[in-house]
Length: 304
Ligand code: RIB
Image (cartoon, rainbow, N blue to C red):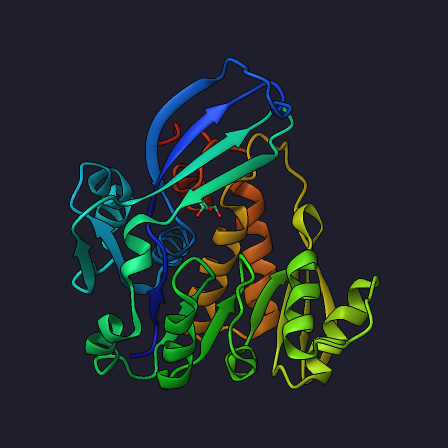
């Protein structure tokens, strides 16, 4: 259905810890925070797409523990369809998210129930999908990503974050492939293991397209993104903001992009909007907790 996004991806509860600086190996530091908040790249992107006006359905897995409620809280509040969730006996995915005084983060993910999202499990739900925009990331089993990419009839937005060893056809099916610069280099190596290393950003996008990617979006953090498609490669600028916490900004970008594509915008216009939306989230703490700022008034308090 037009205007609809299906996210097949991870759902985590994020344990956010604020530190003045990251610890050295073997060092113990005091931090602040320690509250469980909704996260996971899949769930983050689903919430962002929903807040940007798309109908969103989430295919994912949570555990049968208390963390599942924390993980799903904002998806429920925003009206993301959750009929296609698997509840696995055991723990919900957990992410330890450390954020330093400069707003940079270090994240450790324990997949938990996300690892149970097998191809067989998602197959039962794929028959119900049609021409929706389908969004995936790299935090679910790699064989599931390959399976869904092969079975998807609609437009596939593949955010290969983190980069996992998907099949070549999966990457080439993505329209667009969304990666940061580091991920772009690894994705190019997946497509062509012998490819010489490339430093230059535009050239990376161009080489990925030369391998057969229909479109590539390379995110550039606070600078915006490079957008490559059949019309060429365009740099899309972001807006200047005071960075407090960049956690989940990339997911806000992907979710906004997916919603806009589903709602009929072209790729470049969608990326322009996505870059501005992602930038607005780094002014607030947390992943999903910061997303309401994309649509709320700037004076609205953050959701905790
Ligand atoms: O991209 C940010 C996300 O990465 C966090 O919410 C965390 O759960 C990890 O998946």
